[in-house]
Length: 314
Length: 254
Image 1 (cartoon, chains in turn yellow, green):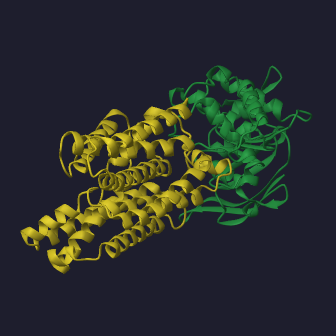
Image 2 (tube, one colour):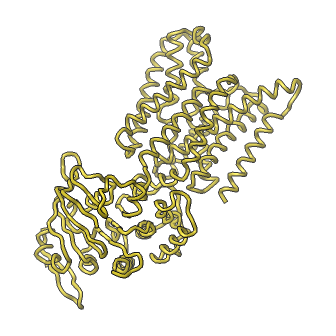
């Protein structure tokens, strides 16, 4: 039963969270728990947002190999970091007010995503693939610009860009996290409320319209939710392109259902569990810092290759 | 009744349907025939509301189709297109259940489930109901989509080449069922408009014929009056004859 599997996933995440909080807990417990709690909340919120966003994106794109990160969110984020360091210098970049920087980055990413989705889907939502390809090409263009700008940086400034361009959970600001959560959690609820309509949308545009779904409106609304989820998450911790692919693929495999009332929360739970579990292993058991995003990208990239090679792209 | 008044559909600068005016009365089977590129599928899409006409008007049961809300339209007209391609991993039963969407909008009731089971039984798919559609043959999948259209319980069923992937037995079974559903007095009598390349099926089952060529209406009317050798020969630009065999019309070359 998919519902039972969903409950097991929730239980698994709760156990991982408890482990993350309580493993090797020493004095001063209050302070340590508070620090760990903030980090745990960031891992859960970001993992859930990216996992759910990918499940939603795959449905409207009618393709289980895609992830919203592929349309250039990461490239735009890196471009923003590079541009800021280039214009303000390493010290100026470090001195930016964190809250304003987070708000501006989130706004730019949301507007860019809305612009991309809106530009291509202005008339109808028939050509999501064209939108994806446009995003990929824009991503390549932005990476090229970032690469060019990086050549103008001092080595120390370049190191600042490198550090800012990889997702990290170690230094998440509690205020930023609260703001991000206030955006992401209602967005996740909205996605859940659309589950039945997304089930119909998964039939494809022609069939969905034939049974009376306002398909194009559902696609536009879904993409707006995806834009919010990915943009705010990326602004909060940095880009993690392939986490969503891991989470959505595992959600399909574990739950074995087309129903979005199960799939979207399952992808969210798995996304959160991958981050919490991964961070626990790397930070607590292996004693590494800042390795998780790299490993998640590596595993997600491998999965992407396996999925591409195993079956024809659909 | 479905009325088309001066309907034109352009694809780029080319008219796929050119100033077509037609009326489809309730009940019976209307076969759309014509060579490739005649505009048959375009006509069906325009009649279903999936493709808004570039100019002209489509009225269904007296209402302008463009002004009918999507759900209401889907409770009036069910359409099977040639482009059905589902990436979601659904079973046949789940697919057919989506035919009930315009009735329950995501909150299925016991009556909806009953209708689905009846539809599966009627179209001989009960044995395959638990199979995933991506494991079915093309013909089985086609039957599942026709069954889904039937489960929509609409007065109108518009079917684009439903026989394309079917073997002779299943093609005949399907046309027999559609024929029975469209007879006067049949419970919930349906009106079927069907694109057919099988002229034998058109000769055997259709009550009315609509012939198209290069986007224009060639002729329409009762089958017995319109489906003639000279008309078919002119339409398809190859020699065809209608003969009587065992009390039935058949179309043969020559």
